[in-house]
Length: 81
Image 1 (cartoon, helix red, strand yellow):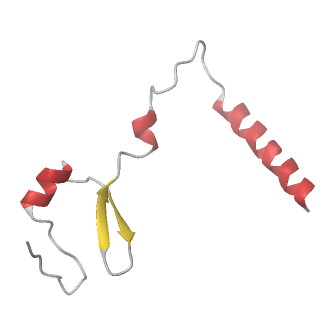
Image 2: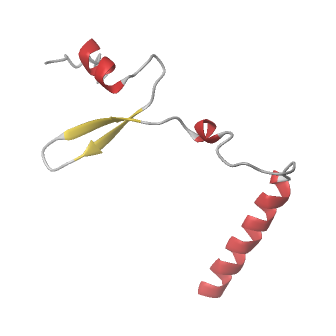
Image 3: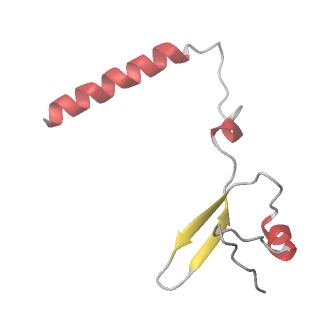
């Protein structure tokens, strides 16, 4: 199976590869560099794909959680210095 590289460095993935990896338009892929080769892997969504993965009992205050995480990281960095 072959593909041609365009002047912009782009290729079209053959339909057989798209079907095998279940890739749809707009899908993201990852290139894994190996010694003399490259592997192409599908990326399983972004952070959006995690929506609903963690069950919670009440509404969450993400602003406060982010603030606590930033404070904790700041303390960790200060303790290393």
